[in-house]
Length: 161
Image (cartoon, rainbow, N blue to C red):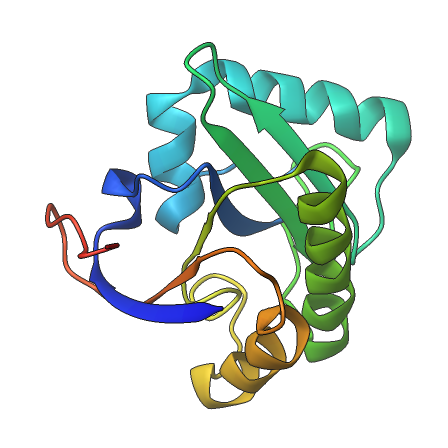
């Protein structure tokens, strides 16, 4: 079930916090930057995973912190593998495939709840009006709370009850 909330996803109590990235993303902008700054080992482990697996857009990778918070990195953008290369823009097809991977992962990992931002609309460059229906199409039938952070309010915890 999807529950729209307003607030700062970094304060979410959800078991899994999701964000969109590119393979080998420097995580230097937006939510990825905030996650990178709070959990530098996640960023390091993500790059190691990218170098080992060469993920494609539509893939997903989950990282678990020492306190049990899971960060799901959805590959919504084309990645850069060369020195100094920058992530490309996201596509609706990549978002759809990545959300399918998230759904499969959430069932396999038995997530109890998920928090998602306005996926791929910042650095990814997509329009929220195009992305939101894909999120609803792919995740609405999950039997867990899916907190959709449709409005960002810095420093404010959302009402996830």
